[in-house]
Image (tube, rainbow, N blue to C red; front, side, top):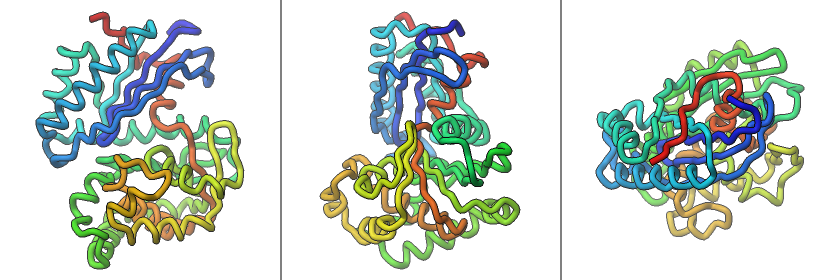
Length: 315
């Protein structure tokens, strides 16, 4: 990739489609030009198959992104599909439609590759590491965990426990019932056994959250922000327990009234908070940092040394 060229990254998540356009200036440096997210919710009719309405929402969003990309004169585009498109029976049909109707070529990546890209993005947002960290990126179809330190990455794994999956399986009452919470926690205990074993080998008491629910937590708890760095901020743990109890014990209407909680997330934030709470207990977390960077930025930082992109659509 030529220096000072515009590169677009499209992250097709299970819940949200993201577009990031930036000028790549040098390795590990870029200037953001444009950023947008649209809640598509590909799994609103189920994770196994993308329903007709979410399928149409997704393609309409990509047509919009293609227009924005052309308007900015972008030279190359990287579009990445994650859990929903990996697992849906009509995921390949969605990829073909995006190519034919939007001129956007989507690459499907594995959960391990997703975790690798998240790692690069998050670590670029943090100050130099002084302790071992547990990075957590909650998606709709999967959740990625990475254990890292100044010595490098010690362990990483993608788990099929995204919030869309958890919500459809365990959250059917309003507010969520004690029995549903118990069944969810028992499920996580089994699913996250590899994480428990990894933490036994590489203890990490500093949780770094990327995107999604962590952004919401940062917004809701903004008055408790203890330390702000350029692309990340540390939250005090004091308000986290109160926020957890408030959200988990609330109805949809009550969550809609909480300042900082987007309407598009009120249905999924309960299981997300329970997943975070479970992780905090499992790892014995004592410090929480929210990263402004995640997979999109990791892809962008790879753009100067890897051939991840394709030419921008002209049609």
